[in-house]
Length: 421
Image 1 (cartoon, helix red, strand yellow):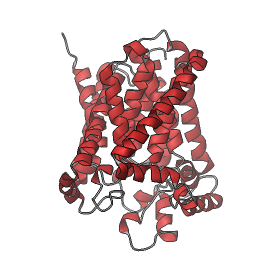
Image 2 (cartoon, one colour):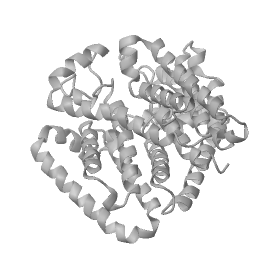
Image 3 (tube, helix red, strand yellow):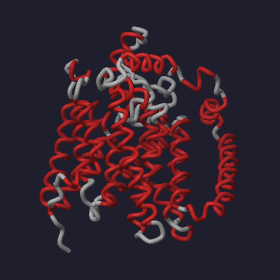
């Protein structure tokens, strides 16, 4: 069997880009920041050479990815981090947008990318579960950071953060795997789903529960349910009862697990039950108010990319905890408005609408007729977009490591139309 150099380069590039996104904090802690940047640059070079060998580089092929290219351009203009002498974050952002743009021009790489995401994300799934049963080894991981990550009760519940410096980041990695595996499952008929796949999905769900992050759990499951309904619109009525029954079954399982692991589920369920004013917003209301205020003063073009966190330092930082000196809004929509104004928000909405339009077109075309691999890629790309849009209400997924995987998944979906274009 002949193996082309181009395919080898694309595989290496995907491993470097996706693997480094899932091990970002570990690489930086052990080797420093520069090696991480070098890995991503090498990945971008591999993707570029692959595109050159496959002759996929063309201006006409960039049309469907144009809104995301414009977002990359907007992020450079009046960038607050660049103004403060910080260049690596913006460089990485541009590199991932560029690679996703190049990848979107050709098919046949998406399935491999999904399995690479599943592999590296799976490492965090297993790390979370292993640490839950043996938290004693977490001291070795904590020594890499030099402090106890947020959400771990000063290291006593290290499994929540796993191999990351924050339990939110660990939950993000795990929910990405949940979306990949769950999207494949919703594309298969009941008899096509193996027990191993279902067991793996359940293990991922348990790991996500262990992080105690309700937003990731709710938005991740909701995204899969929405994708399921979209891909099975003709069977909506017949599936509704099964979904309700599944929800009841899950509730029973949770109750049983609560009896087995009361401490863990007290933490998780406590966050759902104690949903008062302060708990729901998690202190975000002042942050959102600041973003609205900044937008009202700069409604057209905003204050510049990454500008909000420097304003946060001036107006809201308590002056003590250095880790919280530069925080984002925890609401992507408000931050886009604040930093890029109506112009930037318009481009972002265009990118989202453009992607959803392609996905709905492909749903009508492929559903029941396309091969399983293409339908799975469609479900993954659509599910990732839906999760991204929901989580953006309370998270910063346009400004953190989530975006690196998200933009690759956007390219996965758009590449399905590459041969037609």
